[in-house]
Structure formats: structure tokens, C-alpha cells
Length: 172
Length: 293
Image 1 (cartoon, helix red, strand yellow):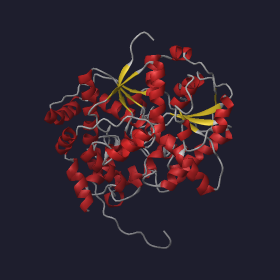
Image 2: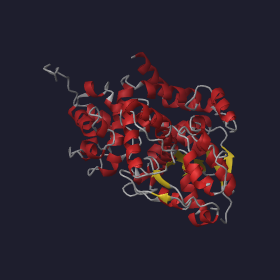
Image 3: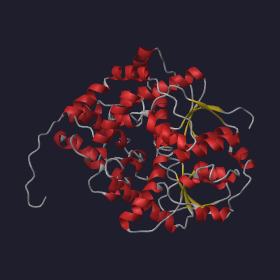
Image 4: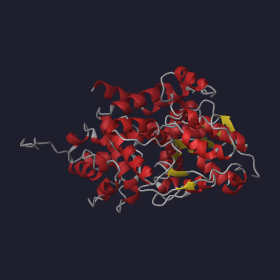
């Protein structure tokens, strides 16, 4: 900590229930902190910034203020190595994703995921315009992309409410 | 091959725009094998990336594609393990969880659609193994590539989570090995063969992603591979395009060509390297190609 005393952090004991209420977050409370998820994590090997076990422990402790705005929650590569090995069936990959869902609903989405989600919700694919993509495709002898039915996609995305989540993250 | 093989072709957004060499070679191979690829009209993104933000939206997108395929009465064939993994997971969740299925269908109703979960979602390799058949495929090999040694890169989303995908054993994967071996090449084992390429973190922390790619390149190079064989557009980006960036960043020299499996298979089917867009990969494969002439 370089001689700096840690700041007091507000604890929210309900945070773990919030995570558990999100799809994939159900088993967060089963974690008994064995550390297998850290041992098998390919991301953890190359950075100290990301540890599945630490994230889950912080969430269980209610350290919402530290977890939600962190970059750490977006470093998971979703390789599912931990989910395959967790002896308690916690499914850390899914729990971390559930934490992201809570973060998104509190205005925190990593810009990459926010922009991609906005583009998909609006244009049905990961590109805003098909024209440059079709130019690349033409050059290599591929047919143009079949157009997406945008009216249908936009109606569905109105129905799920994702646009509100994305807008709130934008204004944060 | 007794039955006719026809599929709705879903290359995936990333392959269709950034890894076109994969799509080009897959189309050529499908043509050579008599596998018919039908244009998937109206389909949207599989929803994979959106699953980091909202599960229902990500699932509804996948469900719409599945519902479109159900109307056509055809299975979905994709080149991307992320599309395969995500759409399969949504399909399994719909089968297992009635409430979830209802929730998804309530939203699909607004566009007059419904998802039943009746079609299969196939990755190109799964199609080759389960529908075309390894024995049939062997009969089509006209040019065994017996002078080269390759390292197969499995990637994560084709196998994991196993309880949803059930395609291979991530601790000791062998499906891609079997597909690679029939082309006549020597298929190498190497350290941490099952390890993640890091592709999904490139947009959040490029340096971290490069560290994972470098680790893979070191193992593959230690094993003495002439080429890396991938089945995922993100793995290919990490080990082909980003190999150049790794070399520059760490002042190291690898120059190991990364071929999409469809490019390797295409060569052994007697197709021309240029037709398979091998010359468009970032790491030149000239030396490799000279070994098979």
C-alpha cells in the first residue's frame, strides 16, 4: 500500500443477494475459498489484477463500492477453466458475469462491452454499417452479408430493456 | 456419406469481417465435400458479447436465430466457437428451464416468433465429425501432408462449459487432433495445449492478451511445430496477426504460420493454397507450403 492507510469502505451486506439474483450468480454463497479457480486461471498467471477467488470473496463481504467500478471484473476471458474445476460448483465464470450484470445496472460497463452492445442492439451485428465489411468481403471473393432484419432486432431489444441499461451507463 | 448435408451458414460477425480467410477456406472445403451452405437470411449477431451486459438480451438474440432456423427446418452451421458455445448454451437453457423459455418467448412474441429448441447448432468441426464422419472424410484426402508437424490450438468455447457443450474433454482434448491427423500431418503435443489464447481480453487489456499469446507461441515453438492449426477466429487473430505484435514487443522471432483448420484440410483435399486464402494470412506460409509441394 506504499505507506498509505487503506480507506474505509462501506459494506453492503445485501450485495451478495443482488449477485445471486442475477442469472449465473446463484451459487456465489457456496464458495469456500479453496483457491482452485485462481490456480487454473490463465489470466491470473499474467496479472495480479485479476483473481476470481478475491472477486467472489469481496462480493460475499459486501464490498460493492470496490467491486462494481473495478476494471478487474472485465478481465475474465470467459475460458471456463475455473468453472470446470470448482469443487463446490460455484461456476465462477458465471458469478463474475452476474457481477457484471449488477455493475451494468449501476452504470458501470467497460467501454468495449458498452459500445459493442449498443451497436448490436441498434444494428443487429457488431458493425454499425455493412458497407465497409462488404467491401472487404468483395475483395476476397466473398458474397455480401445477408441483411439483418433490423426492425425485428430493435423491437426485441426494446422488449428486454437493454437500451435503458446502456443509456444509464453512458450518462454515468 | 448417405444423407444430404445442408445447413444455414452462420460464419459469425468477427469471421465475416476480420478473419475472412477462415470463411473463404471453409466455403471452398464445403464445396469440395458437397456440403451445402444456405444463406441465413435475416439472422442477427449470436449475442455472445452482449452476454457480458444483459443475459436476457443476449439470450433473446440467440433464440431469434434458432427460431428462424426452426422455420427453415435446417440446422445452424457456424465457424466461430463463441457463436457455437453461446447459441448452444441458450438452447440448452431453454430446454432445461421452463421459466426461462417462457421469458424468452414472451419477448419473441412481439415479433410473432417462438423458440422451441428443435434445431442443432454445429461448429464446422462438429459437423465434420458427427455428420460427415471421419471415415468418409479420410476417403477424400488426396494429398497427405506427411512432411509437416503441426500444433493444434483448441480454444475454450468449443468445449467449455462441458455440461452445456459436451463436445470434448478439455483436460485431454482429442477431437481436433483426430481431424488434423487425417490430413497426414504429424500432430504434436505441446505444453498447455488446452490453454486459453487470451483473445477475449484484447479489447480490455492488450498487453495482457499479448502475454497469453506469447506463452502459447513459446510452447508451440518449443515443440518444433511448422504451423499452428486453429478452429476459432479469435485464436487465429491472437496467433497470426498478434504474433507480429508479440515479436515486435518482446523482440522475439517466431514466424510460425497459423492456419485455419479449413485451410489445412483444404490442402489435403487437393485444393490450391491461393484458393484457400493461405497467402492472405499475416504470417507467410511459403516455407510450409514448399514442404508439401
